Image (cartoon, rainbow, N blue to C red; front, side):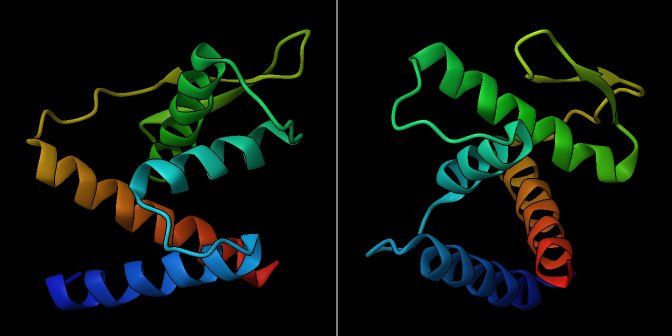
Length: 116
């Protein structure tokens, strides 16, 4: 995906999430990851602990990287939290490349969600 395509699709995704959530401003990558984590958890609470927020973002990253086979869903624990297993090492990249990959996968995630 070329840079301009990524920028366009990312902005479209941000607007879609903003509109669906009724937020006054566009969410950043961390906000999108948090929302994906909540979606994958399958339940909403008004407050999560700091550790739970980190876990939700980790769930989101695992879910997004599962598109390319880096992680595989293993199931849920007794509390209903999803768990993933690392299937192959994620290539070591710089911060910008990691953000680009996560944005591409978040775009894919929300496109699939829209199609359902």
